[in-house]
Image (tube, rainbow, N blue to C red):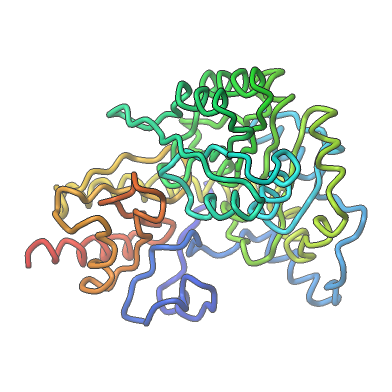
Length: 384
């Protein structure tokens, strides 16, 4: 298997992205969802060729992106995507907003399922709608969608749900039966489901991943998926995502978006995404998943050893750990103290909703050495 390892810390500190410029050099940055690995070789080569030939103009009206993603979805996810029912845009957030603007009217309510990716709240408002909170259910063993709560919200007039699948920050991969039930409920009430599936390529092989649009006919009628290579392949700054549909009515909605929505796709983002979705990058992605599997287990071991008061469930997908530090008594937002005193930057739990009080989100998409040092720094606060 191809081994994918993080770059050394001194090289990482030469990066100019948000992760490595937000805080001083004495802080270990494990907050924003960027990873510390080198690019997949096929992506590096595609970008190198583009720079050498000056291929930096506008995105073309005909590109291989849709076909590349359809092949990737079939190969990696077992999902048959009709490339003619896709359209690109700059990023997943933009795709979400543009779809919500057309499936909701100003002031209508959109369900979100906290704790959830903080921009979801702002995206709903940007689209002109209002947020309806239906928190995930904590079963004691994991998190699940509250289908009864979602049904009640639709019955009370909510017209859409913004689904996070896999879920950020918990790393939950919603199972097929749950997604099928959600689709039937939405279909019953004429509601739309906009599924953010940006973390889908990072579902661990033992868990698998179910694309929302694949679960049943109802999902095809009510659903929109917004996907990207950006999280798995660390391409967020290059700006490319796809809006995917599976029914004539939903396809008409996406096709009806202004041409500028598609023109906002980045040329480098498109070239990189095509390379990421190619078979040439499969071995790299498999290696990344293996590394992340080792890291998620390492984190569990380190927390048990150094922070036994922390509660952490190994995520099904991604490289984000949702950690409950309530029992340490560090208040509603323990990441503030950890940043101030341990010099480790974690994402603030309350930013994900009231359900995040006492929690932090830690990015383990890095080296074992950095993960170990971060946990040891945090554990030193307990000794104090």
